[in-house]
Each structure stands twice: as structure tokens, then as C-alpha cells.
Image 1 (cartoon, rainbow, N blue to C red):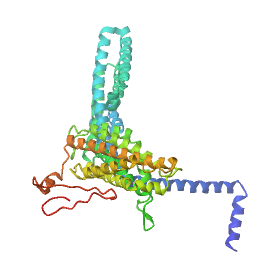
Image 2 (image 1 turned 30 degrees about the horizontal axis):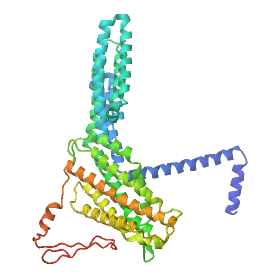
Image 3 (image 1 turned 60 degrees about the vertical axis):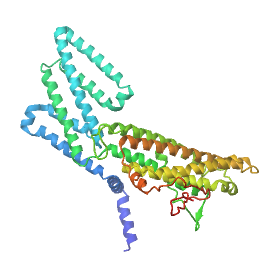
Image 4 (image 1 turned 90 degrees about the horizontal axis):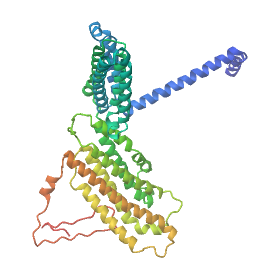
Length: 475
């Protein structure tokens, strides 16, 4: 009997009745669920490989919950707090966040809000008991609840308060209502407020200590890497755009490294909200590494704003790579050299600034040189446009090339503003300047009779060459 006959007989025996259909359905469900399990396992592996800190964070949350649960399991501790010990467990779940700044922000907000709201609720209960009597006490409590809840809720609309204390304001309303309203039926209001404050303080301090002591994740470092990474993405685009737009190839291959740089910059356009959130959380963090107390986190937002302004120009440049109306090669060749020079030098300047920001060390000459070269190329490009080099060409065909040239000139101005913002940040944050002492030692001493002549080669795509004679003169 062949395998085909065997399969046919098996299908015939299983598929004829309801039992066969049920068996096939169960097999299909098993295959489907197994596929989902495998897919979930692959996704979990990818998440762990992308950022191993996520795995460590999961273990830290488990450790913090285990430590706080001892207040519920250990009899002497449970006798001191009773069922209120469960508030410590709930606080750990709510407060523990991925970064130190977020955990500190939530923990401090929760403790301060609980302390202030509990004290106010005890005072309201005392006033209502003394002045209201048996009839007026619930009326006074309801009046105070209305006034406090309405006032604090309106305070949440203030941008400065919402950015840093929104969670604390919510906890303030919650704690005040719980203590004041529940105190109407209970007599030990002060004892209840004390236990509530103690358990929440324990539940807030535990995740803070675990988050600080075990593999801390500093949101300030992530903010710095994000801003520097955005500049690197723009630098990659600028270095590849010139070769891609003018279709420059070597040995039949494009000089731009693939096409991925055409899409990486797009994430910069939508990074404002993330940067603002990270800057607000970073303000809660204590001094660590090169970040001191009162580090100027708001100045990172200025650098990010200037970077996004440059990204908008780059977004406009990207549209001219695949536009339907393309200028002929003989038209684009006339502006090729200064445009490529601008792209190369601005890309290098952005990468120099990004590397300096990551290392918190600012070069005193590298980014200045690249920006100076790009400005010289921009002036050369302006002079070409003013001379009217396309007088005999079709106007419709020249528009894309003129637009690209004008956008590149604007990009040079944007990069200069980014450099100014980074230098301002470095000055306030006291970044290390590594090259300045060395440059002072190597700077040649020119006599009064020495003469300096600098020649700019507009056809060069590299930096301006210089020839130095033995007596220190530059020709």
C-alpha cells in the first residue's frame, strides 16, 4: 500500500463525519497558536537585543515588588500597618519607571502630594467637626472637596505645572478626597492619614533606591544621545545628497552609501515631543558623570529646535531627488562643484558637532573649519547664480536646480545656527575643550613683515589646501 493510498484512507476515515472536521479544526488551531507563540518569542528576543536595559528593568521591578511585599507577609510589619501595607505595593507598581528621572519625578510627586493633601484633609475634618456639628459637617466637607478639586484641576492647565507636577496634582486630589470623605465615617482620621503617608513613602522610596543602585538608566544621557543622533542623521544625508543629486559615480557605482540616508532624517521632524518629555524628566535626576546639578537641559531643546529647522530644509531638498521635472545634466554641471562642496562640508560639520556633544568635549577648530569652507562655497554659488549662467536655457528646466542651490545656501545658515547653539550649551555646561592648548603651541609666530595669501579652489570638493614654507608663511 502506497503512502498516497494511506493518506487517502486516513482523510476518508477522518473527514467524513463531524469527528474528522473537529480533528482538523483542532490541528489548525494548534498550528495557528504555535505560530503566534513563535512570533511572540522572536519579537521578545528582538526587544531584548535592541535594548538590553529592558530586561534589567523588568528584573528591577520584580525585586522592588518583592521587597515591599514583605510588609504584607512579615507579621510584625503587617501589625504596624495593617491592610494599608497594600498601598506600598500599589505605589511601587505606579511609580517605578524605566529611567531614574521618571521614577524620581513620580516618587517625589506622590510623596509630596500625599503629605500636603493628607495634612489639608485632616485640617478640613477638624474644622468641619468643630464648626459644622452633626448636621453641618457633611455640608462643609462637600464644600471643601468641591473647592479643592476644582482649584487643583484648574491648576493642571498651567503649562509649567502640567509639565513637571501633573501627576502630583492628580494624587493630591485623590488623597484629599479619600482622607476627608472617609474621615466622616471614621474617628481615627489622623492615624489613617499617618499610615497612608508612611506606606506611600515606603512604596516610593523602594523603587527610587532600586532604580538608583542597580544599573541606573539616566534619561539625560538618552536625551543627549538623541539630539546628537539627530545631527548625525542630517550629516549622513548631506554627505550623500550631493553625489546622489548630481549622479556622480566611480567605477559604475554611486559614491553615496546606499539609499538608507534618504529616510533616516525623517525621524528628526517628529522628535520635538520626545525631546521635551526627556528634558522635563532629566531635571529630576541628581548629578551623575559629566552632568552636574542644575545641568542646562533646556539648552538641549534649543539645539533640537535648530536641528529640526535644518531638517525641514533637508525635507525640501529630498523632494528634488525624485521630482518629475529634472534639470538637464548640462545645466546641473554648472553648479555641481560648489553644491557638492557645501554638502560635504556641512555633513562633516554636523558629524563633528554630534561627536563633540556625545563626548561632552568641544573641538575649537574642526567644526569651525568645515562651516567656514561651506560658507565660502555658498558665496561662490551665490556669485554663480547672480551671473545668470543659464540665460539661454529653458526657464522651466532651470527652476529645480536654482531651488536646490538656494536650499543648500539656507542649509549652510542652519548648520551655523546649530553650531552656535552647541557652543552655547558647551559654554554653560562647561564641556572640555581638548584642542585649544595644542593649537596655541602649534600656531606659528608671524613677523610683522610676513604676508599671508590664501587661494580658494572652487573646484575642489575637499578642504582648502595650504602650502606652508619653512619660515611659517602660507602661500
